[in-house]
Image (cartoon, one colour):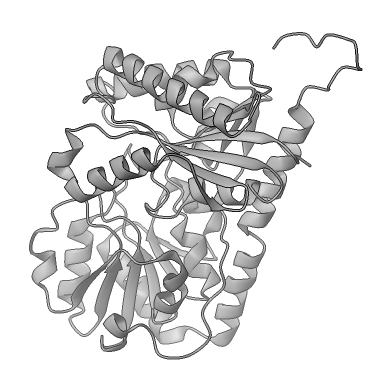
Length: 391
């Protein structure tokens, strides 16, 4: 079991952003190790898109290192130059800025040579040999997009660099594992998990308690992956149902917001989500099926199941192994029929089956597996007086 390690955890998302795999793994690793959670920086160009988020991030950078939980330290990278994900030369400069900031931070914490955990290929510089005992790449999904675009070409180049330097590669994606990892002993398939149980029975939060049932709920970022046409079709055909979307809106939702049976409640605190989920009649994952979502394994699937609610999703490739526990549908008609079925025939037994499944797939178990793999890959310290060979 990995214990007593210093870990530099390089995250492509902010700590307070939609709480997902990055934060879950970091907080569980911090139970037995010291973790520096380093957030990627934001450029001044981001002020045009997210002014409040950008200013708050810069304030966090100015505050420096903060211990947000026992053994878990947060540090925001400095402001970066624009076009970090589109121009390779700019990315090289920005990575140098991040690396120098990270090195100052880990030295300030007294970390001699931390293990590097890379959760985003835009930290590919860290996969080179800097004296770290291990480099871990958590390949969460492909930031796909059309292969001919500059954005994808830069991403692919950085991903290849990260893979070359990684000692261990984790992925929750069966598609990624089947394509790249079956013949590579560095690869380990570690799906997402869940870490909370449903709230005790009682009225939901004020902003959802007055919404008429049945409530078909969604928790997560409302971004490019969400199929707005599917949501519009569902809302139009079942005007007596309430569709509740909880999370940050990162794209134009058109006239969906104007429908009387569609409710956008915004982003919620992590600790409040079980109370919202307990108000759902069913949970939905209305994602588009395309190259950008073929490796996406939604964390929310396990969160819905932990709350005991039935789940209806589009047929994402990563969710096919869960068919039977959840409903997977090809089109709006099938999605609607599945929701009709779960609303009309759900039972306490079905709820128990779903909650039991979630209990077998906790983040505690996932990170326990991760720690065992890391422990087995760590170089053995040489006897006193001998020299340990380089990596």
